Image (cartoon, rainbow, N blue to C red; front, side, top):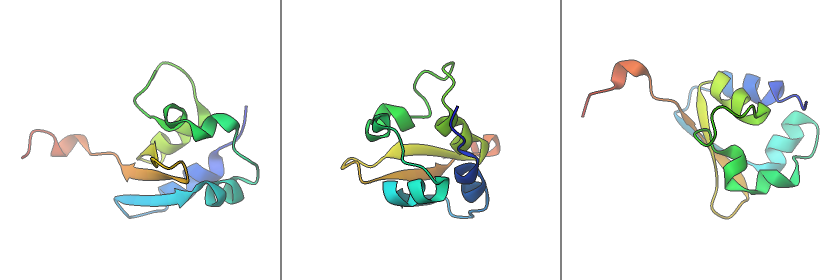
Length: 90
């Protein structure tokens, strides 16, 4: 299994509610090239098939972020997960 700990640690240290990283930035951080599947939006989707173990998704969620591939495939948008406390508010 590929280790996405550097991505998790990087995201965990962020305070922004949203940030974008290029595929190149992610690969440099990880120290390896992402698989071809990383070009598909579903590979990053945190809500798709939650029962399926996907280390990149687990790393993002563990850091408190949900990942979404940018429409042009050039990078990934990370959005901080909403806390349960904020639910029910307008």
